[in-house]
Length: 171
Length: 157
Image (tube, rainbow over all chains, first blue to last red; front, side, top):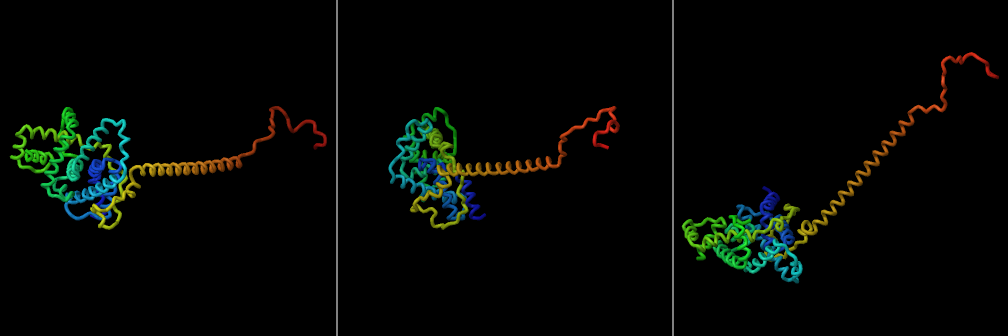
C-alpha cells in the first residue's frame, strides 16, 4: 500500500473516534473538527509508520493528544469568552456542560487516559503508547479517573440508572 | 478493594482478566454496584453523535511533507489550513460554490435559449420566403356564360 493509501485508510478508520476524543478534550465541536483535520494533515506529511494497526492507532492518537494539549494551552492564554453563551441551554447541553466540567476536574493525564478509553475505544496498550506511560499506569489512572467522575457525576449517573443501563464497550 | 474494582474496570474495557479475580470482585455488593454504575457512567459521558460529527470535507492525506513535524508536543497548532476546509469557513465557501454553479446554469440556459430562438426564427423566415404569394384579385367563372362571344369592346379586336 502506498503512503497516501495508508493515510486515507487511517483517516477512514479513526476520524470518528478522533473527533469524539477531541470534542471531549477541547470541549468545542468546531475546534475538534479543525484539530481532526490537522491531525490527518500531519499524518499525511509524516507518512504512516510501518507496524501493526494498534501501533498506528496509538501513533495517530498521540499526535491528536499533542495537538489538543497545544490547543488547550493556547486557549488558556486567551480571555474566556464562553460564559455568556450558557444562558438557555437545553437538557443535552446541560448534561454536556456537566460532563465537561467533571472532566476538567480530572488531572490532565488521568483525563487523557479516560477519554482515550471511553471516547476513542483504545486498549490499555494503545493508551500506554499514546500517553507514553506503562499499561499498569493506564490501569490505575483509569480507575482513579472513574472514581472521581463517579462522585462528580453522581446525580447524572443516578438518572441514567433509573432509565436503565446497557453494556457497551465505549465509543 | 481497589484491586477488585480495577479488575471490573479491565473486564468492562474488554481487557483479558483473571476469571477468579473477576469472580471475587463480583462476589461483593460494592463490586456489583460498581459494575452497574460503570455501565451508566459510560452512557453519561458518551459524546452525542451530533456534537461529534466528523469533518465531511477531509483534508487530502496525500500532501507531502517532512516527517519531523509529527507527534511533537512542542509544535504550535496551526489550524489555519484546517479551518479553510472545515468549520465556519467551509459554509461560506460552499455558498460561493453554489452561487457559481447557479450563475453558470443561468448562463448556459440563456445561451441555449437564445440559440434555439434564433434558429427557429430563421427557419420561419425561409419558410415564408418559399410560399406562393396570396392572390390579390379573385376571378369567378360562372357556368353558362360564354366568355368568347358577345360585343367586342371598343378598341378591342
